[in-house]
Length: 117
Image (tube, rainbow, N blue to C red; front, side, top):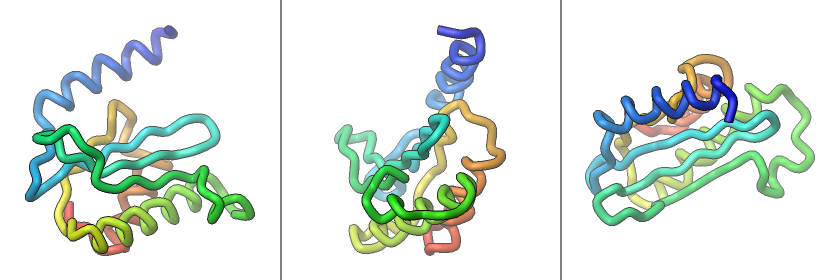
């Protein structure tokens, strides 16, 4: 594990001490790899994922745009799925990543899609 990864995991621990998903306000967590972005809405009381979205689905196979544009589209898709599952408000968990670039684009897309956080 690189020092960059260990730093992110240390920051993640600090975030997770404060951020907790309840049934009324579940946790929206983001994971960013080099090529893709993944997002889940989780109820931490039950330990269950309510909805998830990622850039690896067939809808993004022919996507032609930047990774930030793809992240925003994933955020919008997640917001649509969340609304159909009855989730309106979430708490955002950036998972140790900086709130910048693709993570910010996903959050902006989710807000544009109707999620409140």
